[in-house]
Length: 290
Ligand SMILES: Cc1cc2nc3c(=O)[nH]c(=O)nc-3n(C[C@H](O)[C@H](O)[C@H](O)COP(=O)(O)OP(=O)(O)OC[C@H]3O[C@@H](n4cnc5c(N)ncnc54)[C@H](O)[C@@H]3O)c2cc1C
Image (cartoon, rainbow, N blue to C red; front, side, top):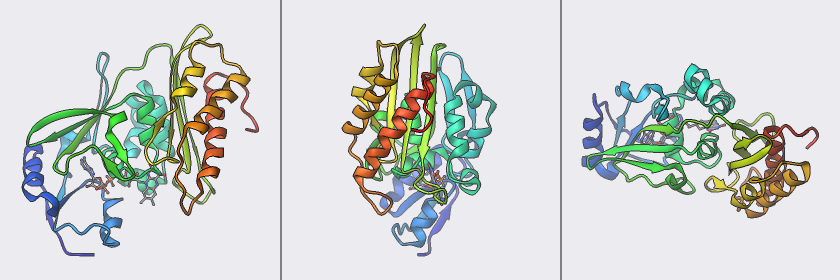
């Protein structure tokens, strides 16, 4: 690993000024779970690391009935899983965070770091897209918010400028008729990272589905809204045939990646299986054996 200077700003403005001034010579470090591996392998060789460790304001989870949940970028996956607020107001997110990776990663990795690294084989991005999250960022130029649908640009690439810091993630309050489900598929029980994941949030009026956000993640370069599948669900009383048709549409529209963990066609088959399972579970249809 190349030697580097470790800078620990006491405030967000100071951190933003450091990033702006140092440019390409520095990287932000949060929990370090992804970055330290990249430093060890010399995939990244910054001269300075700007730690966010002293920015306590980025560690909070808050809830406001009008604005919804606000989760600081430095909140760790384990904190999300155990937060009373997240469990109450976004149970799907708490469930996802509690199943991510393993206890070591959940206790070290932060939500902000997870999103900023933009590794496709991860859990929060798709889940947050189904929840219509917004990513809030700061820099010397001020603040801006990026809808999560626009945050991920490509494989390991986000819409962040090099000197921007993610400060928090906001989730609008869920409607009272909303329910959701997140499922992840691992190729083998020994693996931690998902090969495919599916997140679904629906709204129902009596038995009719009136809204749906279905997101395919981990198997594609960036998470993907399954628009044709959503259109098949909306305005219907769900049946097994419709669930099967919607899952097939999601798999057809996906553009899975191929790598050493699985080729695109295997991923596409698993997208169909996991999407159908997720739709069935949300609508209370039998999903056993799929
Ligand atoms: C063995 C292993 C298994 C894993 N399995 C899973 C899994 O199953 N599911 C899953 O979802 N993830 C998994 N991960 C990934 C893990 O979730 C991320 O590594 C972690 O969340 C990153 O957070 P961090 O705070 O450690 O980020 P860091 O390593 O500190 O930073 C990661 C990147 O984000 C940038 N960054 C960090 N915070 C900010 C910020 N606030 N603003 C701007 N840039 C920032 C850094 O500069 C760096 O480029 C796994 C990781 C490991 C090592």
